[in-house]
Amino acid sequence: AQSVTQLDSQVPVFEEAPVELRCNYSSSVSVYLFWYVQYPNQGLQLLLKYLSGSTLVKGINGFEAEFNKSQTSFHLRKPSVHISDTAEYFCAVSYFGNEKLTFGTGTRLTIIP
Amino acid sequence: EAGVTQFPSHSVIEKGQTVTLRCDPISGHDNLYWYRRVMGKEIKFLLHFVKESKQDESGMPNNRFLAERTGGTYSTLKVQPAELEDSGVYFCASSQDRGTSGYFGPGTRLTVL
Image (cartoon, rainbow over all chains, first blue to last red; front, side, top):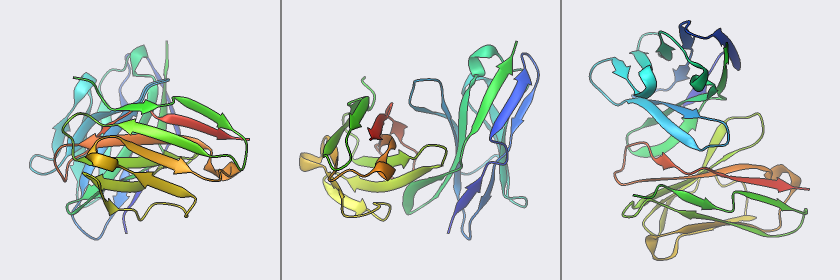
């Protein structure tokens, strides 16, 4: 069975500072990995995804994530955050042949001016 | 092109009443998914349609929940009778191809009093 752990429920970061949101997964088979963002009063939006190939994935809004198979991690990073990045971020996994997503509990990112 | 739409955006009902949530996927998307987030917890998969057929309904919590997708277009999720623990945000997602992440709608916030 798959599971996703987002270790930090809340992350406060000063504006223009770097941020890393952590995600670890557990699966007995190869997985696809995703990061979604939910801005206040909006739906989920796909930030980036890893299906295969290069382990460094670049997404929208300057975010990137690195797939590390040995550590079963898919941490999300941004070198310099802005107020507009205030949102809740969700890591999710799925595997081929079973498209349902298994989500982590989310990390609420707060940007401090 | 319109995204995934959900109606209503909010619903407040009494325990024991019936509620029907609607999802309109992106035109041409055969795959439609329902997810639910109970407050403070992770987003959980409910079921997956391919056109009008239920591909996977392993996440449906009990027989008080009934999902339909007549004609392979929009989908409805009926809760009858509603219980307090059904409160949460119900998300719908759609995708064109299998094995890829879906586009999510804004969600329906259901409150059962």
